[in-house]
Amino acid sequence: MSAHDELCRDGRFGPQCLALLTRLMRREARGVPALEPPDGWSEHAVDDLVQEFFAAKGKAVTKMLYAQAGDDDQLGALLCRSVKNWLIDWARGTTDPGALRHRLDKLLPTLPQFARVAAGQPGAGRWTLADCSEGLFAGDVEDLATAGRAVPVKPGAWSSDTRRSPVTDKASLVRLLERILDAAGGSLELGQIVYAVQGSFHAQFAGEVVFDHSAEPSGRLAAAVGAAETAQPRPETEASEGRIELMARRLLDTLGHEGVRILDVLDDPGQVAARLGVGRSQAYAKKRVATAVLAEVIGDDPERAAIFAVARSIAQDRAL
Image (cartoon, rainbow, N blue to C red; front, side):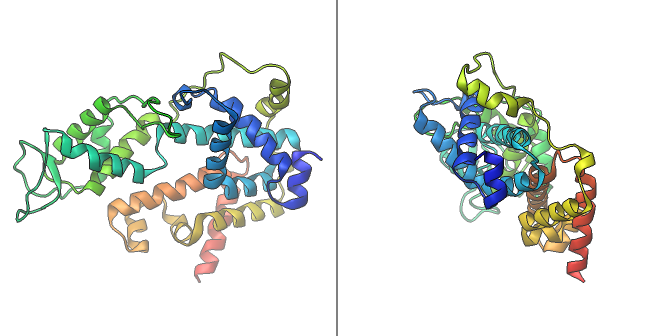
């Protein structure tokens, strides 16, 4: 039984689909040198990546493949694209704000150019430049992320046998922190710093990864994934109204309650904030999450405009 037949029969990943995913992950991971462990891509290391991918993207990818893949070649092409996109995020560390927060919490107290506002002072516990005597930052954190994008940073490299590489090297991170706090002109909460740093990384690393296929696998592995690399997804003419509605409902299921509520106002952070009852910074974060789901589920679908329109219509009907 082929991977496509298995998915159509069961509606989920079984042994054939997992075997295809593992082959694609092994191949595509070799094109991202920053991810390679010190001991190389062992079977265990590849399995770890497969597990991380499936934990993060398994539900959405399964729905997408079930709805869009018409045969094994299309399934392979779509899965290969999802693997590549995820590897970019994984290599750049943009998917884990908790890890970044932990790193900054440990790093900032060790650097003399930064200081924590003393107890009893306005903004006690916040961070500022050591020579800054300004008060609390009261601006838009998105502006700080924009300021940080002017600082060139480079992705971190493996320095231990842990599975995740650091998002950038220490020198780049320190320069970025200096620029953000200087632009703030006042003290910042750690969460605001994390948000601004992440915003800077997203802008600089988006689409910047170039996969290195100078050492392509050969033999049976190359033959197994060759068709997946070159095959194209189902053409637009095969899409039916029924499929468009199915994809729209799958999109709504993946977005979740908050994502559905802001689907028709994604271009207006102010409306997002008002509808969800959150601050502007949180509104930008909610917008990014919803936008990422859109890209994952219907990003390259030839009928994405129609799917989005139907999804928005269904969401509006539900709100009535």
